[in-house]
Every structure is written in C-alpha cells, then in structure tokens.
Length: 285
Image (cartoon, rainbow, N blue to C red):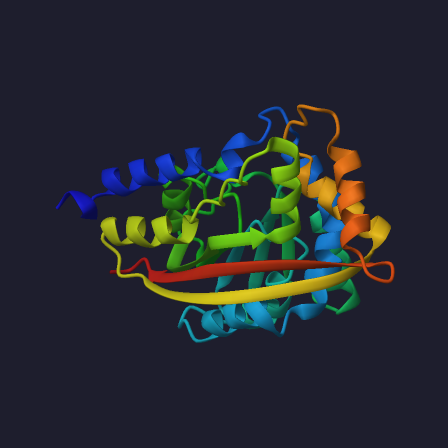
C-alpha cells in the first residue's frame, strides 16, 4: 500500500515543509542566536504555566506512558528552559537536556539549581550533530522526548530518536498554529496570507507507523493569550518576524504602527490558536 510506506510519508512531509512558514526563513540566520534572544520571553510566558494547558496535558500523557522509570534515563531533545526536564527529573535516575541555545540551557540550569535538582545534565548541541555511538547514547534512554522541537525535522532525525531509546519515545508538535498578530504583520509586509506551519505531528505519527511501530496519538486544541506593554509587544513581534526578509525595509515601522493601533490602555493582547498532536510509541514491538 503506497500510503503506508516510509517513502510516501517522507515525500509528503518534505512537500508540506516546502509550503510552510519555516521554508521561507532566511537561510543564513543564526538559529542558536535567535533562540537565545527568545529565551527570556519564552521562559516568562511558559515557565510559570507548567501545570496547566498544553504543558500539563503533555506531562500527564508522559506520566501514564509506562516509560517513566526511576532507574532509567530520559533524553529531552530541544529542552528549552526546562519546562519538561525539570518536572520530570524526579521520575528518572537522570535527565539529559539537549538544546542548541546556551541561553535556554542557562535558564534551565538556574531553575534546577534553585529547586535543588541535581540529576539534569545539559548538552549544547544540535540533534543532527549527535553521534549516538560516540556519545554512548544508542539505546541508552528509557524515554526519548521531543516536544515542539525543531530537532526532529525528517526521517533521519526521527530514526535517530528511535535508536537512542531503550523503551519508548514521545513526540509533540503542531498540527496547526495561528498567531493572529504575526499573521496581520505578514499581510501588511508581504501582501499575502502567511504560510502555515508544517503539521509535523501528523507526519511523525504516520512515519512511525510505517516503520513498523504502533503509535498512539492525542490531538488537542488550545487558545492562549497574553497582555503585554507596548514596547514588549513590539519587541516580541519584531523577534518573531526576524527570520524573514524585509523587502521594503518598513517592517519595524509597520509593527510599531500595528501595536499602537491595536493596544488598549497601553496594553497589547496577543492571541494564538493552535492544534497539537502528541505521539507515543514503544520501540520494543
């Protein structure tokens, strides 16, 4: 069956990515530095909400996965500021937290130290650069997790994730994401609708199944919002648009005008609607 082969789903994923928002990013952008710049705001927005929303549901799914074992290790690919590594550290002998951003890892280390957590090891490296055999990571981890991580981007990086696991894998990513303010700025700048994000969770699920495993998937919808002061809102929007070329040189001015126009009493409301897929599977089947 053509639709149930790795080749089919791999080609479909590649085609989807070429139509996606990520494909139009400037190729020469320093991804690690971009994530460094996002780290403080990322931590402020998400770090205090670990028990609720998307984060809470993901932690719940991991807890009942059957792959949580205090005698095993966990690998968190694209760990960010530790929103999952930190609350899961007590459930494993050791957590290895991998990220390309030194600033994200610094935030994680500070938070873990302040909480008295001593069993998290941070590694600053892109997932594609990891040598499983050279680092003795092949089959090392009871659970390998990649949660909204750009590290899992193709069949090769997905296979490596599986090869690192002794028992199970957990992947969570977007099926849909709509940032209304960013979409408005995109239309004002490029005179077209903003491309969608790639529905990576959908393709990971089908690829894992085509590889011979029996994944389960949970789909959830979320609507999140925040109220920022005008300058913070301008900075956040400019940062989200930074990876994309500004053909007119007017993007900063448009962002400033847009935020001023949409603000009320000096506050700007940011609204994001998303659909997320969480995929869980055993590697021993």
